Image (tube, rainbow, N blue to C red; front, top):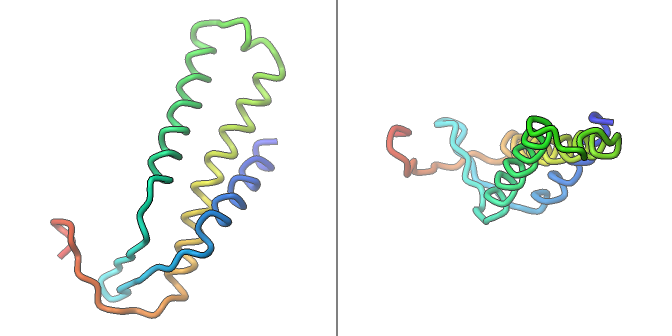
Length: 111
């Protein structure tokens, strides 16, 4: 079930970023991706899900004895992890296929 949830998440991650354009500088190993709030939302969602699951088990909440909760925990964890895998894999493939142009490293330490 975890594997299927991760595959579903990977497909959702792919669908989320498939039409985005990237720019890359392969000589300096830089990639420029369009920014939006979705990464923040996904990270917050991952934190909330994992926090609640672990809290429920550690607090011995009655819901943790239900098979439905255990299955839902696995499905949600797998899906959210798969979204990250799908997004990153899609960006990596786009990076490999993209034309290299000169990008300026804006963060300190990348120059």
